[in-house]
Figure 1: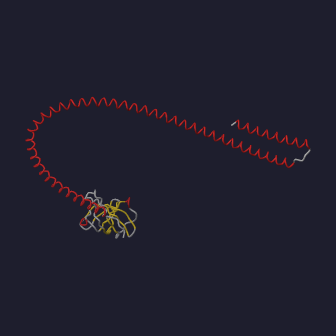
Figure 2: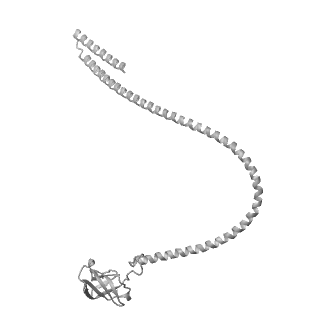
Figure 3: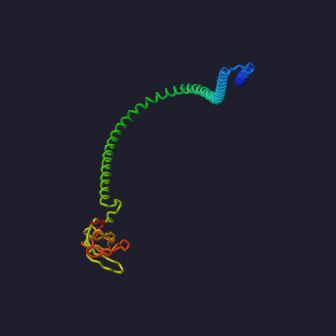
Amino acid sequence: MRLLGSVLIFVTMITSIFVMAVAIMVYSTHRNFKEDADRLTAKLSDSKNQNLQLESKLRSLDNQLTGKIEASKQKVALLESERIQLVAQNTASQAELDQLRQEQRANTAAVVSTQSNNESLTTEVNTLRDANQENQQARDVAVATAIRSTDELHQAQGILTSLHERSTQLVQQLSEKISLLRENGIDPSTDPQAAAPNVRGIVKAIHRAAGKQLIEISVGADDGLKPGHTIEVYRGDHYLGRAEILKTEPDRAVGRVIRHFQKGAIQEGDHVATKFRIG
């Protein structure tokens, strides 16, 4: 690369000397070489341009060479890494080969031991063959017993299948009953004796006793009400409060107004219901 630069500089220097010699000749002869000088100047300019182009090309080639060198270094590093991996794989393969050889030796010893065991087993088989004939008769008896037991098992399985079908039917019926209770607003886990019936009535009278407000309603024991049940009191679309049943008779009941739930003054003629439904 330096040689090429030196050549270019030398060519430039020769060109400059040539132009200078031409100028001296023109000056010494006092001849008008303007046209020749213009042509030479143009050639010199072309030479300089070519020189610049060559220098640019030289730099480009230099850069390309540098890039190729770096790429080659990277490839060398990659090949070195692959070589190290191959060496490691070769070491692992050698260790695996050694292990396989040890296993082969162990298997060979096992084969010898197996042959010895086979001879012992042959003797034992001959002994067992004699015993097998005696066991054959016992097996025939056992087969007959197994057949009888199988018939009994099939009968039991039939009974079990019938019971399972009945259980499935009962579970389905129970599920339907639970769904029906929930649709009617009754918790399936509620004690049937404690569940309040779905009834509606009106307030017939209002009393006060010991600071408590009591109401007499038009439904009672015949409608399923029991002491401890609660009823909701309302007038039209207006909720008035809740009362707890204290005493029941066949066609009426007496309840205590629970102040915590009271939302308005309760009057005769107001409606009551165990399940609050306005309208």
